Amino acid sequence: MRCADQRDRLPRLTTLPLNDTLKTMILQRLLGKIGSQRLLKLAFRLRPESELLIFNGQRITRRQAFADIQALGGGLQSLGIQRGDRIATILPACPEAVYTMFLPQMMGSVNVPLNPLLSERELAHILADCGASAVVTTRRWLGQDYPAMLARLLPQLPNLRTILVDDTAEGDGRTFYPLREVLAWNKPLASPRITGEDLSLITYTSGTTGLPKGVMHNPRRNFSLAVRSVSPRLDMSLMRCLLLPFPPYHFGGMLGAVAALIGGGKIVLMDRFDPAQMLDLIQKERVTQVAGSPTMYRLMLLAAQGRQFDLSSLRRVTFSSEPCPPELARAIHERFQCNIENIYATTESMVISWTGLDDDWEIAAATVGKPAPGVTVRIVDDQRQPLPVGERGEIAVQTSQMMLGYYNAPELTAQVLDAEGWYYTGDIGTLNQDGYLRLEDRKSDLIIRAGQNIFAAEVEMLLMTHPLVRRAAVVGVHHPLVGEALWAFIEPHPGAALEDSALSSSAALFPSAALTAREMLTHCRGQIAPFKIPEQVRFVERLPVTATGKIQKFRLRELAQEEMHRAETHRAGPDGITPSGANVI
Image (cartoon, rainbow, N blue to C red; front, side):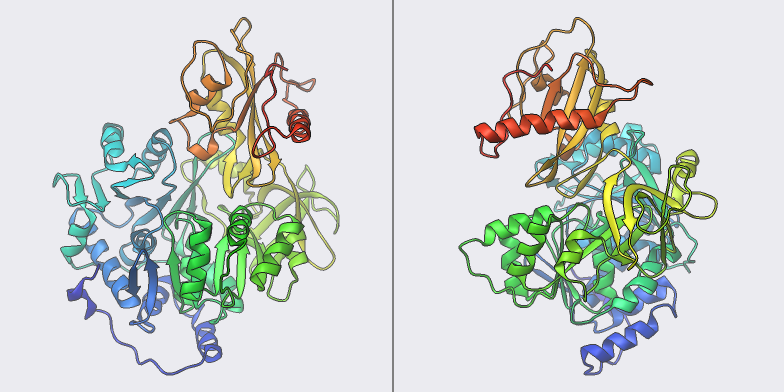
């Protein structure tokens, strides 16, 4: 989509035939010398006719993207959206999802990127919590009708007054507007001076309280990642073409888009993950870097079996969010013949550590690398006192990228961020003599399933809203494909009727009068995102607890692993996991 009238507003810079090394040196000198607002505008003006975004047949130049961002900001301003207003996006990967990332630097708004897979209940909570004034969404994706859902939620959201919808020509002229029509207005954008201390981003993450919580960032802290972390590692040949298989609401998507823009590269977007399509795109677009998860790479390796793909353009594949077994890291290295980068990051602290171009694949499989520039890491005990090198404890972080805090939740902020700026991750690890950080366990009940973060407490709270459930415990159990599978253990109220069956959440779901696995999964559906619904449900007469009444989740994991081992032995299902005949333990 082009906004021809706004192209002339973009000053043309003289472009010289510079090689990658010289371009890298120039960008490294620029980073850190100017603020984020000027930095982004300059990045769009650098080689304005070069491609920036490739998506479903669209090839969008930097000039076109900049014009569209200005038109989007100007249109929102004409509809009453002002500096400081929250603009939520509910979009799969697409150019418009990238555009909204840069609105805070253009118009002073606050970006609230949301996972389009979230349920109506979850989105209602988040939109109310952040006080969203505007939403940018699409008409339909993966069967979800977003305009219809938002129309149902409007009575609960008094601040929401503007909804822009992509892929439609319909609107009511009061609240709902076609996105393409708003872009076509070509309204002028009044761009205020943005300071580094302005709130610019609220990213929602599930929490141990069971409710999603907003993580606040400002431009100074957010873009220090580019200034202090991207700059020393900036390599134009690596950033020439980046493939992103997930929406920009994801931390990896946001970081990748900014890095490619600043680094002079282009971004190939996918609105849904497809391993064969990813391989085709690497070959067709001569992709130099891919960002993904170990689960994605495992599926790509399977898709590549028996087929020929030219993957020689790849210089690096990166992963985060879940452990990568050594055998998978070896297979990735052997098939893709490029560097493997393991990134350790949290929504609160941004990047904590990463492996480097000089690190072998074995290092990327065994560690999460060394602390990134501007990051200090220490290992602490239960009293938050530093431990000697090599000892196991909780990972604590100080970083220039640290969050401002949790939105509207100072008490939760104080639990994880102390007065000296140390953030306590809840992850357990060790730091060796060479400075490499190794993750060993999680102190919190975080489960990582196919790269998606799931807090057990959120699912447990929902399960316990069922009138026949007394207590529930959710654990992650190792799974060869998705990293961790969700197992829910239910302790019913005394006298609750049980059916002697166990059921996978992939089965058809129908309500039942008795308390069954089927009934529990039906109870979850529509209340939480599909990726948070347990694969397996088991009923127990009593959950195992400590003397103080705390649930012993390690025992539940052992029960699940024993059952999986028995099922593997008998091998009755396509994935080797067969529900036992009885679900009452």
